[in-house]
Length: 140
Image (cartoon, rainbow, N blue to C red; front, side):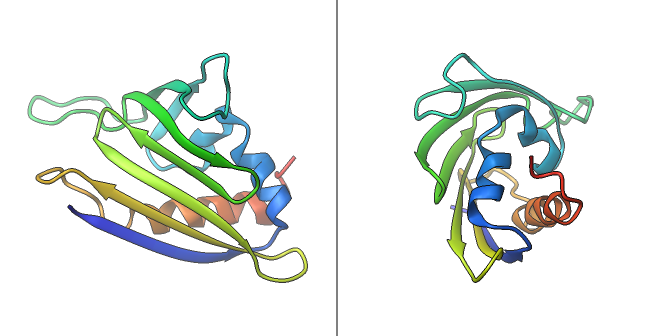
């Protein structure tokens, strides 16, 4: 199974980062190639399903990517968020660990089913975007 992992220190407390993660509509701000998220009434809760639309348009021989549903597999505030993107058969898990005063170590693991192309830079790009949100002070 293809797998990619990235680790990055973020310039905010774990609780501030969790506030970003806990708002489903903000997922599109930090996850690459996602344009729109429509969460179900459960929000960020295990078993919830969010409709997800990609920023890309489908081509003749290629799907748009990430369109479909995001299914929440695990939530442990403010430590862990695990989900699957059904359109691309990608599973992901974000773990947040305290790394000092107003610093958080984020570890993002992404895996895909066999024969599903997995961009190796995907977790790194997501953490860069999350880092930028924290740096710009948009964590509330």
